[in-house]
Amino acid sequence: MTPPIDTTRVTSRLDTSGLLCPLPVYKAALALKQIEPGEVLELVCTDPGSLEDIPALARQRGDVLLGVEERDGSQVFWLERGGAG
Amino acid sequence: MSDAARLLTEDVSPAAEAEPRRKRLALVASKGTLDQAYPPLILATTAASLGWEAGIYFTFYGLDILHQERFRKLKMASLANPSGPIQIPNLLGAVPGATAAATKVMKRWMKRSRMPDIPEFIEMARDLGVTFFACATTMGVMGVEESDLIEGCNIAGAAAFLDFAATADVQLFV
Image (cartoon, rainbow over all chains, first blue to last red):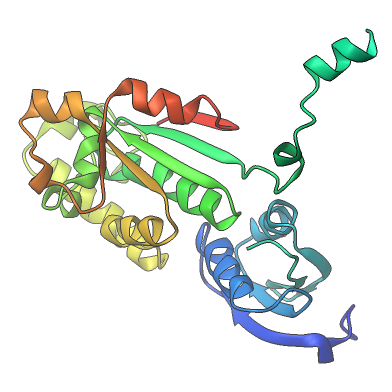
C-alpha cells in the first residue's frame, strides 16, 4: 500500500511496538523535540489507545498529523513538528 | 458597553497577546499503594509530554511515593480490594502473605507490559520538569524529614499547592 504521505520527508523514525500508555506519547514527544519544526517523524505504535492518543498529542503540542495508516496490528503515524517545544 | 468600559475590561496589554500560556495540570496524590501510585505519575508525565506544566501534591500516604526508601517498596493491598490481582474471597485478603503475593503479581504484570516501575516514573517526571510538592503537614505528622525524600521536592502546604492549582486547566485528586 502507498503511504498517505511523501515518506522522503521523514527525518526520524520511532517504533514503540509493545509499549503501553503513557510510553508511546512520552517517547514520541521526546523524539519530536529532537527534530526541527517542519521535519517529519514516522511513529509506529501497537497500543490500541494510540489511535486517539497520538492525534491528541499533535493537537496539544501544535504538531501536524500528516497521516495515519493501519498495518496488521500496528498503526503508523506521520507527524510534522510544529513550532512548539 | 462603551468603548471606555470595554478598554477597562478587556486585557489589551501586549504581554497577553505574546506567547500563549502553557496549559497546567494539578494533581493530588493521596494514596501510597502500588496501584494508586501509577495514575498520578502516568497523568503528569503525559501532560508534560503534551507540553503542559504539571505538578503533583503528594499528601498523606501519597508522600511515600517521594520517599527514597519506601517508593521502591510500595505494596498492593489485598484486603478490601475486590479488583486486586489475586481473585480471592475478601476475608482471605487479610491472611499473612496475601499482600506480598498481590504485590508480586502486580509487579509481574507491570514488568511483562514493559511499564516503568515507580522510581523510573519519578525519574521520567522529574526530567520532564514536573513539580513535586511534598505536603509539609504530612511530613510533620508522620515524622518524615526532608532528607528522607528524593531530591528536588518542593516542601509546601495546602496554600502553596492551591496557588499553583488556581490557574490549572485540569485538577484531579487521586
